[in-house]
Length: 78
Image 1 (cartoon, helix red, strand yellow):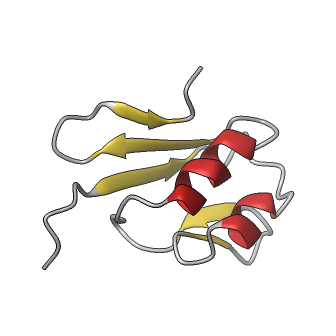
Image 2 (tube, helix red, strand yellow):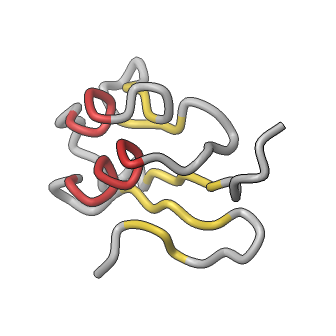
C-alpha cells in the first residue's frame, strides 16, 4: 500500500458539459457516464499529474480534487 496521500475527486454533474477532456486526460480517475457527463472512476485516487491537469483544464471548473485526510483543495488552484 502506498504512503502517498489519497485524493477525493468530485464532479459537479450539473455544471459538467461533457467535453470529455478530463476522461481523456486522466482515464484512470475520471470517466464519462451514460449521460455523457464526467464522474469519478473510483472513491479515491492517488496523486497524479494527469488528475491535477484534468481538474485544471475543465472548461467549466466542474472538477475538484481534495486531500482525503485534510479536505485541502489540491486542484484546481484558483
